Image (spheres, rainbow, N blue to C red):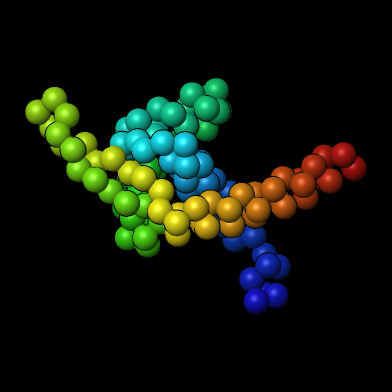
Amino acid sequence: MAEEKRGNAGFGAGVPELLILRLLQEREMYGYEIVQAIGRATQDVVTPGEGVIYPLLHALEKDGALRAEPRPAGGRTRIYYTLTSRGVRRLFELSDDWSRLARAVQLVLRA
């Protein structure tokens, strides 16, 4: 376990996942809505494309962190995602990791 904490192989890899989970903590959304919400919430500093978001949504659903519900919308079907209790736990875990990383980076920037 201590070995896992030593390196940061996925240095920023969890950021889109963290943002998705945080946004879905507030309300349910469909995929493209999440893409747009991330851009708005970050003032377009973070703008992951659909090719990043949709695979993450599918993986999070498969892992049990999200629940997906198809709904008709204007002749199409949209998949709305909601956070599960497992997703809430994952959000807290990622938030803690991100806070720890941000504090570490700040230490270097202040040096």
